[in-house]
Image 1 (cartoon, helix red, strand yellow):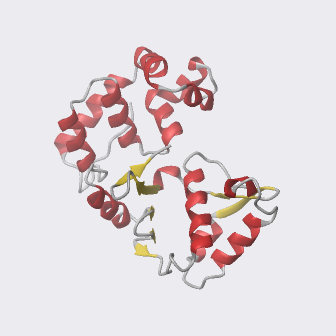
Image 2 (cartoon, helix red, strand yellow):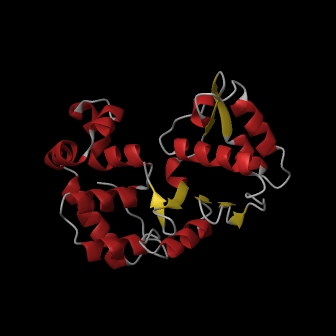
Length: 227
C-alpha cells in the first residue's frame, strides 16, 4: 500500500479514503479485472502484453505508467473504474488532491503546485507557477512543437519529423526546437528538459505526473487530457 502523507490541502478524512481505496485495488484479482475489462489492447501492449509482468508495478502502478498521473490520482481512477467509488465521492476526492472535475480550478491548482501546465485554448503554458510570456498565436510553429512535445512526454515518447506530417522536412524538429528555445521568454530550465532521444528526435524529459495538459473537448469545452 502506498504511504499517504498528510498535506495542508488534503483533509484527514480524504487521506483515510485514499488509504482505503489503495487497499481495495491492491490485489491481483483487481489487477486482472482492470486488465481484462478496462484496458485496451494497445494499453496492454504498452504494459508488456503480459499481466504477470505488468502486475510487478501493482495495480496502481500499472495505471500510473499508462497515464502519467500521481499515485493519488491513479488510486482514484482505478477505484472508480472497478466500482469502489461513487461518482460523487470520486469528484470530492479529486477536489481534495487538487485535480477536481472543475477544469478552471484544476488548472489553477496545478499552476500553484508549480507543475508544467499547457492549455490549448486560449493558448497558454505555465512553468514554475508563472505564465510563459510568449504570444503563442504569433508563434504558431513553436506552439505546435511544444504542444506535440508535451503530449508525447506523457507517454515517455519523443517526437520526430513524422509528428508534423508525412511530408515534413527531415530537420523540422531541430529547427522548431531552435526557434522555440531562442525566444528570450522561454525558460532556460524548460529548455534543458528537452533532450535529444535519437537522430532527428527530441523528448521532453520530466516526471510525467508533473505535466498537466488541458485540451478542447468540442468547440468550447476544456478537459484534462490523459493518454
